[in-house]
Length: 173
Image 1 (tube, helix red, strand yellow):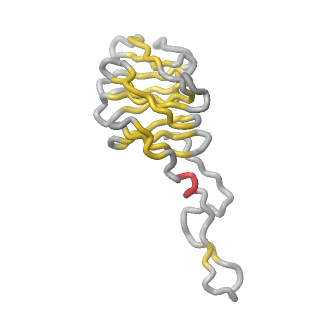
Image 2 (tube, rainbow, N blue to C red):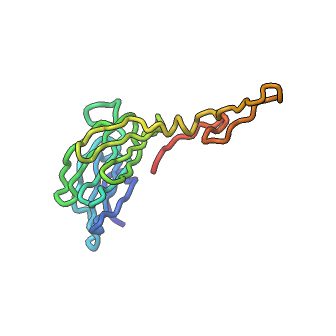
């Protein structure tokens, strides 16, 4: 058993086997080094950290916090140097972010309430898209084929729409 902050939630193992743990009630991420199995450091982040990710090169830890320290209406993505354990930058990403995934030089942050993905450019540290349109596309009503108006009811066209009765939301990664 390793003692970390209050309400540990997510765990991520870095490229050098360093373990990162979000502490929801401590507004921090605990750092545990393999072998010593003791908390070596605590990184301050936003309110209620919920998700962790690593840049492709493993040099940057990405932390999603449900709420910013200075704004209760928006969550943040915070970048932390994995060697110095110092925060590098943070950016507001939207309401109640929950998880982060990385593809190349882009971070994709899921927003719990909106069911959307926000894209963040990891080089410029800017939100480049506040919506991928994934939720809208998944919940799009099917198109209707009506090429024979006298033949009866129209036939739904196959596609990603789920007849309008589903409400699919990307919640985490």
